[in-house]
Amino acid sequence: MLYDHTSELAVRAVLYLAIRPPGQLSTIREIARGTALPGPYLAKVLRPLIRVGLVRAFRGPGGGLELGRAPGEISLLSVVQALDGEAVRDTCVLGLRRCCADSPCPLHQRWFPLQQQMQKLLEETTLDSLVHDLTATTPLTPASWMPASGSATHVRAARPEKRRCRHARVSTE
Image (cartoon, rainbow, N blue to C red; front, side):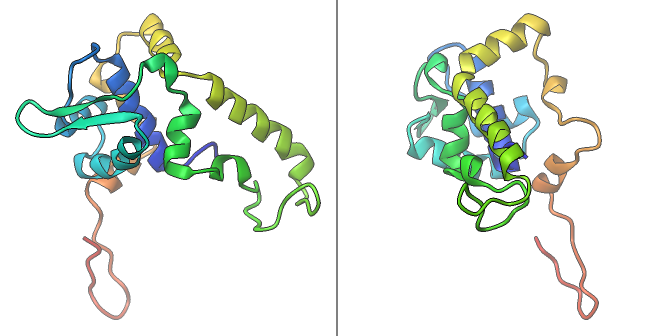
């Protein structure tokens, strides 16, 4: 996995903000509607981005969100690291706690170069370049923000299912 689901949502949200005209604020509701993301969860996802200055928030009537820097100055790596920290770089492909050059897992020698390439890709890819590539190929519509077929994670995040254990009825809402 390149990065976790929360980072995926954050990338979609900041990409939406990057597409907006400079200076135009967007509310959480607008971002959620425009990207097909669940609003309450989206608000939580954006907090770390606000904390590190990648997104700016303005309260009150007429308030909203905008990018904290120019899209060309925000890399995907900075977005992912705001949420996942260094986990993108330091994760063992097999999920082992101790995996490094001194104590490698069976896949370390093959995984490490790929991991380095993925980190470089995230580092070199800016929101500006993504906006350019996306808008050059297809016009962005609400349907283009929907997850790939078979992926219903946005539905689960938006409306958690009630789960029952064997002994008692328990709601996870």
